[in-house]
Image 1 (cartoon, one colour):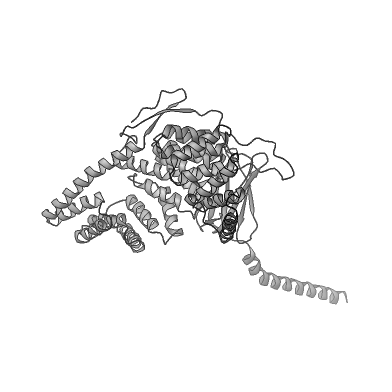
Image 2 (cartoon, helix red, strand yellow):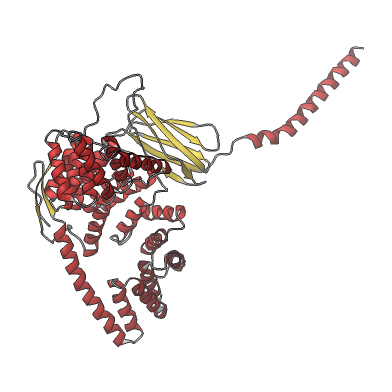
Length: 547
């Protein structure tokens, strides 16, 4: 009997062992399949505080859009963080540290094998609504490190470098200034109904102060400043002491080109109302009247009374417009620290670096602006213009332009700027693959915009380098047809005609080119007379010399 019982025990254990083996063989593939497969992408960056200093010990959380478990990291002593073995996909980042604030990135894409860099700038959190803010509003700085002491109408402006570089700097300064101001939004259906009601009220009582004031103010906001003036004048007659009516009336006159009237009304208001909005309005008006020195001082006063984003930007762009890059750099630097999420403030900072001759820093700052809102085309357009002054654009610049054309395939400018970037970065003139890609992009640009003269010109340059002069001539002639004043197209067409032995046509194009260069130089001189250069002094330095 003992032997029989031992045999039974052995048999039971044998069956249990077999079952365990079967279960293992069945479940092991499922277990292996369930294990997460590590990716090959990585993410790194630096966390800064509002003073643009690295923040150590900040918590950084990476969250994937697919709902997988968020990952967390801590910044090191240099403010750096890193995530590795990531999968491609859509992510957002959030960083925070007690006493320093928090920041959240826009959603961004990560490729399967991409190594991406995303920096974050912490912004101070607002106190709870139940608790009044105990801190004073942010200050720009106690005292600017520069003084604008005068203006000069010299025409030798723009700093050192080739004429292309100088013109590009001046063009970018003007376009930066054009980003200022607060354009009026179109009236909504609700405001249209309100406007109709106010008009009816004014018809019933032409001297109703509230109806005239509200209707005039609404018309300004709807872009109808000229129509607003009579209503605001009636409101001012009904209540001469009302500040807002007087301010709106000055604003309406400024928007309709009555600059002297606007200036007089704003200055009269300043006697008893030292308000930032009045100084800012006077800055706009004095600039239009050609009183640049008075304008920049009014912009400065407005920004110091109320350092909001719009006032700081307009102050910096006014300095940049009048060839004062170092003071503009100071203003935009401080403005970017106060408003780290402002795209146009970073663009202004980049433009100031570019005007100072620091192209690398300029491209870095405007690239940061493009990262804040990748869908916004404005920073890419600035990068594209800067590219024209670069012999070999940086890898970062061309990568941003590639993102531009990826996000905006409908944009002719996106295709053109990326094509030029690729063309300038090609290693040899015989790089056939690049030439094919560039030609495709340029053809797409002229398909999207048949009047894009610069794209036709670049196609001609490409075909000339390939010694396909027949096509190059066709391209140059097309460029001239849509842009008759394009100097370079005439010059290159003359060279192409020489290559094909058409000497008379070459001579005619060269004469046209020389005449245009002369007229262009005269036009540039007139424009430079109109924008007078600031004479400024940096602290502990001699006054800036006109260059």
